[in-house]
Length: 288
Ligand code: NAD
Image (cartoon, rainbow, N blue to C red; front, side, top):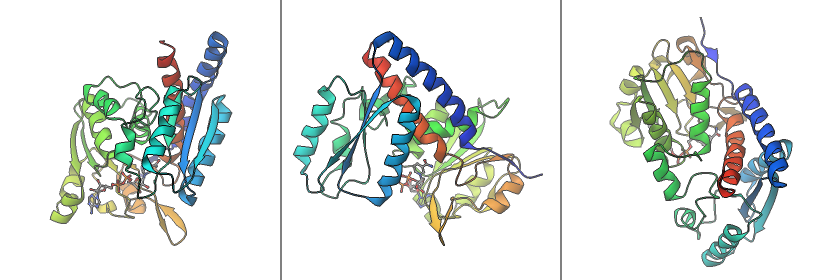
C-alpha cells in the first residue's frame, strides 16, 4: 500500500485558525495588530513570489505587512542603519530580510544586527542558542514546519525514534537536527561530505524518519527508503518546468508510511509558521 500523503495545507489551516483567533484577542486587548516588515534589497524574481505569499498570508490573518524596498547599491553600513531604525520602531514587531542579498552585503553579519526580539526567522545567534537550550519560542520556519508535519501524524511517538537529516544548512538541516534532539530523537545529520564518501544510501536506509533538504532533484533514491519510514522532502527543484523534491517520489511513496508531496508538503507551512512567529514576537514585546 502506498504511503499516506503528508500535506502542509491542512496542517497550515489549523495553525492559521489559531493565529486568527490570537490576533483578534491581541487587537481587543492592546488595540494593535502585530506588524511585519519585509526588507528587500534590489529586485529579485525569486523573492517576489515569497513576498507576495507573505503579504497575502499576513493580510488574511489580520497581521499588518509592509515591504521596505532598498536600492541594490545600498552599502552595508546604510543597510545596518535601516535595520537598526526598524529595531527601534515600536510599531514594528517582526523583521524579515529577503534573501538572497547582493554579494557586497554579508548576510551572516547582518543577522547579528537584527533585534533578537524581532528576528522572526530565528537567524540571530541568540535565537539559534535558544534552540540549543530547548527554550526557543521563535523557531526557524522551515525546520519548525517539518516538526509540525511530524506532530500531525496520529499517535506518532518521537521519543527514541531514529532520524536522518540530509542537509546541514543553518536555516534547515542544523536547527531541525536540534529540534529533533530536543524531542529525544536519535538524529544523524548527513551532508555534502557524506555524499562524496558514498555512504549516503547506508544512512538513509536506516532512517525511521527521513528529512531531506539538499536542493538536488532525486538525490535520495526511492529504493533507499526504509519500509514504513516517514519521509519529509524539503527540496524544491525546477526540472523541465516542473517543481520536484530531492527524493525520488514514485518509488519512495511505495515504501514510506507517510511522505510529503512536492509541491504541497513543507512549502505551504513555512509562511504560516513565519506569521505565528510574528504573533509570538508581538506577545514577547508586550511582555506576555
Ligand atoms: P543549502 O544549499 O544551504 O544546503 C544544502 C545542504 O545539502 C548542505 O548542507 C550540503 O552539505 C548538503 N548537500 C549538498 N550536496 C549533497 C550530497 N551530495 N549529499 C548529501 N548532502 C548534500 O540549502 P537549503 O537552504 O538548506 O535548502 C535546501 C533545499 O530546501 C533547497 O531545495 C531549497 O529550495 C529548499 N527549501 C525549501 C523550503 C520550503 O519552504 N519548502 C525552505 C527552505 C529551503
